[in-house]
Length: 220
Image (cartoon, rainbow, N blue to C red; front, top):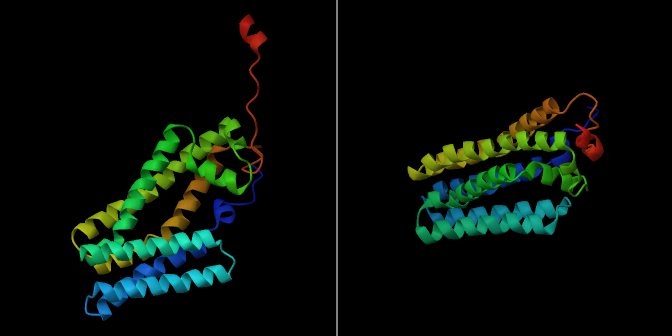
């Protein structure tokens, strides 16, 4: 397979993943410094998210992506303020990971693996990659790695949230963001490369399945 680019090259996301860890860490820091005040922690997290958003806009990120990130932090802060439980700042993250795990699993079952959709969109292929049965199978197998990523987060976040471990949640959020995303990209790329046969042109050049010879099939 002549494919010099990895999934990390194609999808990127390192800076965004790193930036995503800033507001939760700042929330925990503000919560601790402010005498376990959710208001102080929430305000610190929103301010941090706004600063991160400004930097991302300056670096050329799309305003929509920046706005979604800021909105997520605001919603997380509101949830924590409404419930009066600092650990609920991480509840939105838990719900989003559960929803993501389900969505990725369903996409594999219905043979529209989300990894293929994402990579195909980035490469401007629309749905051409689905006409390559080998590439489709590789995307389906590699998508299970992404399902596992979300399951790992849930396995860590849920017990910590249930036992009110706010500081541990902040640490886990940092550890399980970019490092886990990097590992997921590397492993899923390995799965794809391992599954594609020698001589396959790679992700950028999906091959169409050979047409069925109806006449030959009728003679058999």
